[in-house]
Image (cartoon, rainbow, N blue to C red):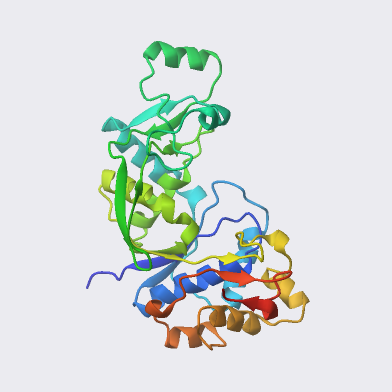
Length: 305
């Protein structure tokens, strides 16, 4: 029998998870478990690593009732896989060096019909002499994809068909670190992930990743981009918004079970545990609007719009 597909949760160990992160993790777990998939844990530690954050994140996820299959995977241990993908794209003539600084990219005119912040292709047609001159100036070179498409369509379980522009995304940064858009595509395929559940703030970048997967002859996962948790001002929740981590809630006297119950309630389920939510989980009944946390982010004052 073929091995079942997998879902995953992939936090960056830059700090403690807040309730928005926990809610998305709970959903990713429920999507995977309710469809008979494995559920994998991957730590995206190529950037912004804070000592001790990874273990605290894993502890919090286990505390709210989530479990995962197999060992925890870390991107920092997978660099040869990313380099192999880059080598394949380069051999196919699909990469080029980019010497632009961040300021130059911001000041340049965006490519026609390109996504917000899209790279305008400044270094796409550099001559050999121009590249030599930039190196002589000590400019580090990022490596970009030479995209042949201008847009790509994916199908999302909550949003339906979604088409968005693609551009020459960075594959390897100027400091030699593989870029997120490459690493996530390579990792999902290598781990057998065929279901990606994550916050809907990442929906605009998904066609770029799906397009890159096709160039690497990798399968495109099924996607479900779920609503975020927002603060009272309608902005994406952050740790500065008050008592938003599991540790914060414990300090206020709220147990992990109460936190899970609040998360489940925000999704329309009267569950008091992850297992209880899973028993009746149905993606078709999920809210399509964000969950708003009032005041200082106290769970007992939360509301749905």
